[in-house]
Length: 192
Image (cartoon, rainbow, N blue to C red; front, side):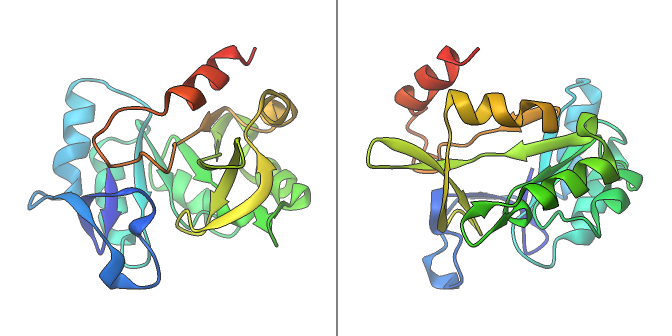
């Protein structure tokens, strides 16, 4: 359940940028976020995501979490100061990306602080990535900034003890309705 300006939208890949005119969507719903969350609840489909894409989505996110308490994860703007509040609002897990990176590098101190605050069992690390030079690099800040961290078996192994799960989007194909990134899926499938 992607939220942008308080509405459920499917946004194309990395088009969510500071320049609002670059935004491309495949879908903008007239239905409220709680309607979608209730679909997840009725089917007992746990682990779905509520993602706040930019400011102005907090009320809509709380509405979705209230419709399926303990059934949905929350992401977008999660940090040390608000993670516990989102869990208290009904999220099963918090999803974090940008806040645990500084100057393009994983900030292990911030990551450890977040793990201490919420517990690794309630933390999802978003390692959404873009390909550059044959490798996949984690991207932050609306998928606009490349980090130095590659998505690889080594990275997954090193970070596995810090979270309950990973969330990995292939940003270059996200929202394009063209299927998956087979190279990324193969690489992830080979990780043990």
